[in-house]
Image (cartoon, rainbow, N blue to C red; front, side, top):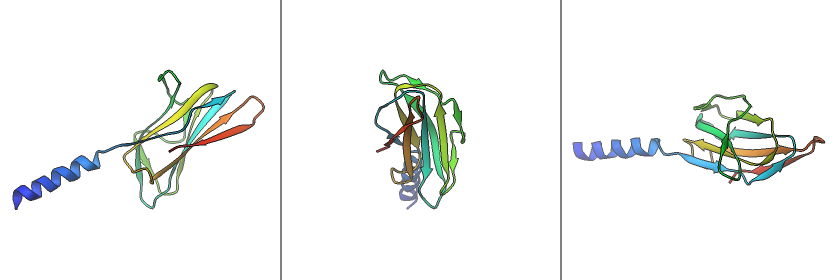
Length: 121
């Protein structure tokens, strides 16, 4: 019985550390971009990171953020990560929650203030 309990504990610990990566499609921003991450559950969700990624795979850290990572996002809370530059870019969110826990959108702004929105999948 103790071996079974130990095995169960190890499996729970391993699954608790599993991460999920959400990414938006790549889009073009003329002036700046914003990544919004919403906790769509009734429990806090841990988010490890939010990163902007260029087509060549290089990561660009947010210029500003309303949350700190790694950290918990409360139920119904949304975090905003911004980047004050344009070009081709996408948003990548790494979370300890499942795909249904986090909703994410990339807002792309052009120089006239118009925006496009890409959803994470």
